[in-house]
Length: 472
Image 1 (cartoon, rainbow, N blue to C red):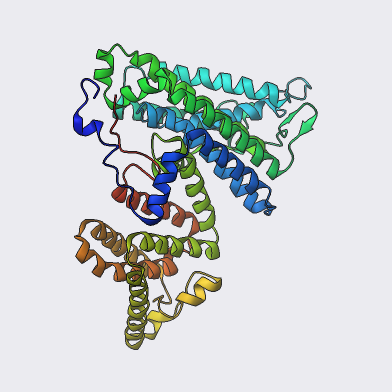
Image 2: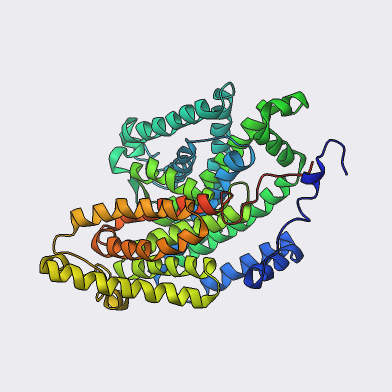
C-alpha cells in the first residue's frame, strides 16, 4: 500500500458493488473496455447517427447537442478538474462566435473594403489563439481570488462581455442587432452549406478535443489540477505551481469554449448578444453537473441529454413523451420486482379516476379543462387527470405541492416512500397537463432544475461522475 494512503481508501475499488442485471452488465463492460475503445465506439455511433437521414430539424438539434457537449467539456477543465467556479465561461463562447463573425463578414470592411472573409483554416486558429490569450488574461486578473470571490469576478467578466457587444462600436459588432450573413465554413475551395455538414464538423472537433483532453488528464498537469481542486493549500505545500495551473485551466477552457462559439456562429449564419446570456451559462453548467463534473464522458452525455430534453419540451407532443418517459424510467429503475411497478401505475390511474369523479361531482368546472399534451399522450391521460377550465392558479399551486412531495420522497424512509409515490405521480401529471406543458420556455428550465435536484439527491456525482476518493 502506498505511503500516506489510508487502508480503507486504498481498497475502495474492491468494495464497489457491481449490482445485478443491467447494472452489473454495464459495470463489467466499463471495467473491460478501455477509454480509447469507448471513444472510437462513440465516434462511430455519432457518424452512424448522421447517416440515418433525419430531417433538418432533428439535425439542427443534433448540432446543438454536440456544440453544448463541447462547451461542457471545456467548462470541465476549469470547474471539474481544477475546481474553479468560472461564471464568466459564456463570455468565451461569445468571444469565439463574434471572433468568427468578424473574420467571416463585412464587419471589418472600411473605405469600400468588403471585409476579411477569411478561410476557416485562418480564422479558426486566430480565434482560438486570441481566446487562449483572453482566458490567460482573465486567469491572471483573478489569480488572487478563489471560491465565491472568483465566481463573482468571473460573473462580472460575462456581464462586461454583454455590455461590449451591445454598446461598444455597434458599427463593427452590430450592437443589439448582431451580425448576420456570415460566410459558411470554407477551406480548399469547399464550403459547408448544410446542417448535416456542420454536424460532422462539430462531431470531428469534439472527438479531437476529447482525445487531447484525455491525454492531458493523465499527464502531470491533469493530476496537478486535481490536487489543486481537492486542497489548494496542500498543493502549494507540495510545490505545485497553483497560480500557473489556474491560468492554464481558464485559458484551455476558454479555447474550447471559443471553438464551440465559432462552430455555433457558422452554423447559425449569425450572432446576437442574446445568444450569450446568463441562461446559456446556466444551461452549460446543467450539462456538466448532470453528466458528472470531472468526467469527459459525463460532460458529453450531459450536453446531449440536457439539450435534447430542452428541445423536446418545445413541442407539446414530444414534451409529453419526455415527461412521462422520465417518470416511467425512474420507476423502472427504483421499483423491484416489476410487479410492484405495475401495481404503482395501476394505483395511480385508479387514484386519478376516483379523484376526478369526486371533484367532478362537486364542481363540473373543476374538470372542464383539457389536457395540454396532444396526440396519443393527451388521449391516454385525459380521462384521469384533473384540469379545470381556468388552470393557471391551479397549476401553480400543484407545482408547489409537487415540489414538497418530491423532497419528502427523497427524505422519508423507504417503507413510507412507497405510499407517497402514487399521489406524487398523480399531482405531477395534473400539474404537467394544466400548467407546465402549455409554457414550453418556462417548463424547460423547471424540468431541467427538477432533474438536477433529483440527480443531486440520488447521485451527487452525476450520471457518469465518480466520487472524489482517489489513491495517490
